[in-house]
Structure formats: C-alpha cells, structure tokens
Image (cartoon, rainbow, N blue to C red; front, side, top):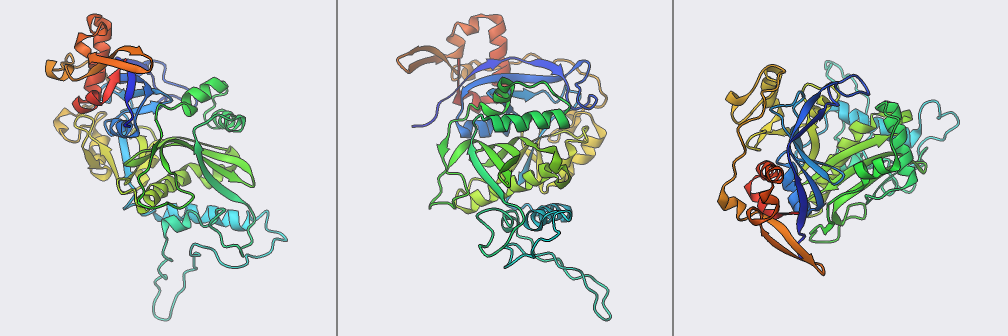
Length: 425
C-alpha cells in the first residue's frame, strides 16, 4: 500500500541568520526568510525526494523552504552526481591518510608496532620516480572510490592483515541513545560554541523523522553493508569501539541526502566532515550499482556562496545548483560568476538577479488557481483509522484568513504536483 504523506502547512516567516553572524552566534536582526513551512506527520520517501529538489529541507519533522530572494545568505540546493564523481587529489589524500592512520596508527603510536602483514584491499600510494632523460612523475595508482573508502574498515580488510585500529561504519535507524547525545553535546560545545542542548533538542533536531521506511527495489540481495530500505538513518563511525562520528542521512529513491554530521573534535585533523561527504557519495553509487538504478546523487543540503564554511561543498564535482525559481539544475561552475556578482542569483532568468544586501520586500500576493485548489486535499475527519478528505477550498481552514495565507504559501512553495501528493491537516 502506498505511503500517504500528511502534514500541517505553515506560512512565511523570518529568523536570525546562523551563517553571517560571529562564530557561535547568530545575526542580530531577522534577515533569513522562509517562503513556507510544513510540519510533517509522515512523508513518503518519494515525496520528500521531490521536496528537497524544490529547495525544501527538514529539521526533524519541520520542513521549510528558504526565500532566497529576501535572505541575507541565499541557500541554494546543491547535489553531487555520485555516478560521475571522481575525488580530487586532495580528497583522495584525505581517504588515504585516514586509512593509513587506521591501518598503521599515528607516528606517535607506531613504536614497537609490527609492520602490516598481507595486503590492503585498496591500492597503496607509490612514490614518484625519475627515469633517465624523463623528469615526469609516474602516474598515481588508480583510485577506486568504493574500494578505497572501505579499505581500512572492518568487514573489508583481508583476514591476514594486521591493523593498528579497529574502524567500523554501520547504518542504523534514526534512534536516540545516550552515546549519540553525548557526542552531539561535545560537538556542539567544542565546534559551534553552543553548550545548551537538552536530550529533547537532540531528538527534535536529529532523531525524529517523518519519513516512512520503504523497501529499496534491488533486483537481487545487496551486499550486507548496504541498506535494505529507504528512510532516515544514523551512520555510525566507531574507532576501537568508541563512537567518534555520526552522520544523519536520509536515503531516498534518487539520492542520499546529508542532514547533519558530528564528530569528536580530537580527530579534527583528519577532516572527518569532508570524508563523510566522500563516503556518502560512495554509498549512493554502491546502492545504484547494486541495482537500485534511480539512485544517482548525493544531496548535500544548501550551498551558501557568501559563507566560507559552506563553500567547501563546491569542491565535490560535478555538482549542480537548483535554480531558485524554476528548480532546474545548473552546473556549479556556470553559476559562480553570477554568485560572485549578485546577492541573489537566478540562473534560468538572470534578469531576475539582485545586487545589494537590502531585502526587496514581499513579492506580489500568492495566487493559486481554483482548479488546483480543487485538487489539494485536507483531512475532514478521522474515524477508526480511516480518514475522510475534502478539497482545501471547501474546508473550515479556508474560511480563516490566516490559515488561508499559510495554505497558499505552502502550495506555492511545493508547486502544483507536490501539493496534490500531500494531504494537509
């Protein structure tokens, strides 16, 4: 039976900005705008897939669509083509450096440690050499992403290889544990200078999810380390049994969606955040290669060109930005000149781009055709688990001006087709 997507529409709003304020602080004024919000009771993974490709994101069960035109730091939806992605030299170096640490330890740990026995599953880096009459360096060894990313991981290393550390990555459902909460507290305090987070804050932000798990249609049984269902997951990184990092991800029909990543700051020098993006891109590729052929991308959240700490996402190639008006995809490299010139860049219609930091104010009133409103449904009643629905413009919510504005804003941000696939409450 198909999953029914249900939620409560919310109207436009604004808040302080966490991207342009001082470290650990937010902007002093409300300069970050949202076109609409949506508190989801439950969503099919396919519907949420469509939502994020229209510029929406979720924080727990709260979904929102930023208003790029009005915001101080416009948030462009970015996705990486995981099937074409080839890690850069610096990204390959990160993977190899981490693998070397796991296999052989840090130089401070190697005293008295026996050399590796056997062979690694991934190719070893080789030193450049010079030959007579030829000063060129030898080509680097071939780097296979899905092999190299697992090379030092439990379940992938050869049984006859001696390793310094036990590194394990597992996927589990999005659930609360004290261990996860402790890592979140440490990360928020040390990295974001945010010491005030309760267990309920953590649950609301990174545990609760409206996504309903659905089976991934592999044609044959996938490898054991791959998920069997779409839905919300915690990707657990353990070193010698200790939880050192956690990635919150949504696995959807066309993409792996990065929600949040946290790590123990004592491993900061290994750039675990950047490594997690490489691993998530590999996960998308591995799911595709196992037969779920609609899986093609890593959705990396928002690209914010004006925020240095968010621009790193542009280093994963080939990446694409969604046009904020038509939601068609444009290569990031082609978008950069406009992002450099304008505060708000419209890629499909460059003439709509805006310079200057000032808020242009609200646009024209949202107008939705009666024909569409007749096809947007709202819950009329619920009895013994069965729901009755009616067109939204015949509901009691429609008679209230405030509720009507929220509905219209949400329908406008979702677009015609998605609005028909969600039942409002």
